[in-house]
Length: 171
Picture 1 (cartoon, rainbow, N blue to C red):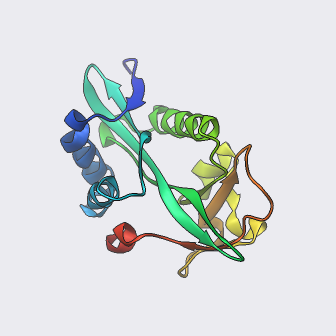
Picture 2 (tube, rainbow, N blue to C red):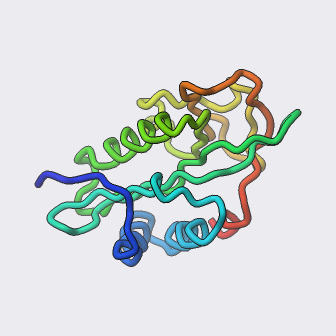
């Protein structure tokens, strides 16, 4: 595999990001999700990252704000979606996208990240089933697939039910 670069998305990447998400997931839902989040107040430009090989976008990851509703309502991060072009999957691009995103979120002093995904993949980065942190999904999902990762600025009072913004309704 050729060397790749991880960087924040630019306006010129929008179509390529949509294509990577569509090809990786085999449907439009995730590409639509990215577009809806991008147009919302939950979008964080520095946490929409692309992997690029020879000027071509081959991967994308997006972290955006969701709410954690408990005794208080807190803004935390959701990792969704993460996509790698099918022709370059299983070559470390997804791993590097996650690691870079986690590092940026930490430097931004974010506290917690939520993900609904494959446990075998995300547990490698320190994600654990959210139930361990008294964090619940807003819908029925296998316990092991709904995970959280506290960052350096996490406080143990962060517990409750995750409330996704309307952008997530179509996924």
